[in-house]
Image (tube, rainbow, N blue to C red; front, side, top):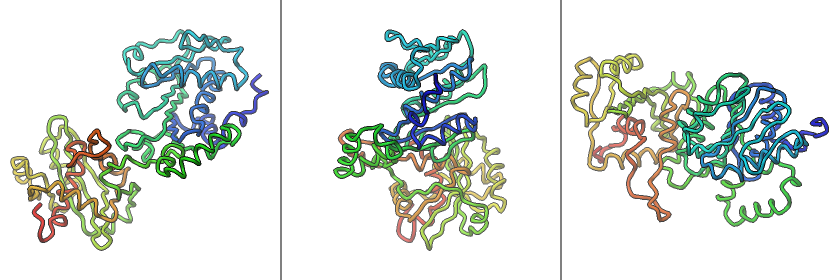
Amino acid sequence: MLNAVKLTDIIAPSFYEVHHAVKQDTATHFLLGGGRGSTKSSFTPTEIVLGMISDPNANALALRKVKDTLRESVYESFVWAIEKLGLAHLFDMPASTLRITYKPTGQRIIFRGADNPIKIKSLRLRKGFFKFVWYEEADEFSVEDIRSINQTALRGGDGYKVFYTYNPPKSRKRWVHEYRNNPPASWFVHHSTYLGVPREWLGEQFFIEAETLRQRNELAYRHEYLGEDVGTGGEVFKNLTLRRISDDEIAKFDRIKRGLDFGFAAHPTHYGVMHYDATRRRLYIFYELHKVGMSNRALDNSIKAENKSNARVTADSAEPRTISELRNLGLNIAGAKKGPDSVDHGIKFLQDLDEIIIDPIRCPNTAREFDGYELEPDGNGGWKEGYPDRDNHSIDAVRYAMESEIRGPAISF
């Protein structure tokens, strides 16, 4: 029955590579971002249904952050996929229950909202395992939500496929931005738009609406239809480049600066190493130490392991006792000379650089904090004054490291 259906009539050309990656088992996690009409939310249930009928032990778990949104989104998407594949007679899809069963084997597609994580932890199957998991609007989930759910669902089998579909959020604080720019091992990242979908699938009116928005508000069009990361307008650092910094580049760096922000309680200590190209006004950040609960001796050993020449480290002067102890251990360390507006001066200096280049592989926490650092909204469409004092450990360490450049001849840092 399935042979009578051409997959090219259901899967858009832009998803052929993802289909092959799923089929060839080249990844476990599939991060599928895109704009409106990209068909990512119809591709995913199609792929899951195909996988289930080829493996009699495979079940699926489909999730939304809020339970009330399940029926009109992921459930209807599965119904659509099953009908398009010509398999409706083989699936039990009761309108009154959020559950779909494959009649020949009893395999199930189960739907859950993550607003009640206890129920997810208690999930049990009579047969088989959850081979497929789908997070729709994945940016609404936290990394902790996903980790907990995956730990519950991904057990008792193999060949798992986890799909994360989302429209790029404006806020860069969402985890999908970090994973898209720096995907972990076993992750497949894909971006799609309506421009890769056959025109007749979406209908002429869809394209008319898209073009109308493009002409009226290009930024909104790029975000909604092209799925671009256009930001909220509250991003502090708009001069970032996240890319690999090669060993050859690092070998030529000759203006190395080191900064240290002390941690406390649950807050991490952050040590950063960077090179400043003053001629081109470029800052290269290529080494970090980011850890909670470090003793002063362990911190000293870790810094000396990187800083073999014991060059100067500039640290947060609010911790004179810690600086004194590290100095007694032999570390070449001094406190930053803070002034009344040191935070503003430091951040504005960094904002004015032509480019801040961060290696997201060597410095994942630095990349995350700089990329996600945003002003606080004031609730009226604007922004609160001042810079938020959170998730900025690496930013503080960079400010301390760059104090001699920031202070200049007139500014008291």
